[in-house]
Length: 107
Image (cartoon, rainbow, N blue to C red; front, side, top):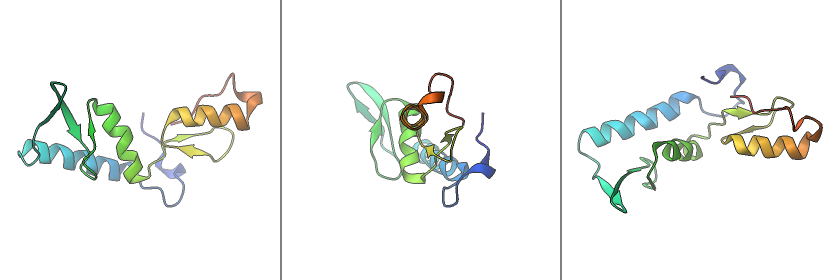
């Protein structure tokens, strides 16, 4: 499910920035521009921005949000937004304890 782009806070890049980075990574790897790297015998993917390596694509995707500033998860009770859903769960437990048992982050 894609986040509602109209609800993004001002100054937060859209998903197109993340898509651009993923496309750039894929085209660099496909063209042979990026050297295949291994860690413990497993191929790793590296961030096109900073070169940090990840074993799992999902970890690279999460990391890319640090460069784009994308915050797709939001608190259903206030304007708090986060790049990771766990941070919204923690926010709800501390700031909205009356809703902690029933609330889930919105994406």
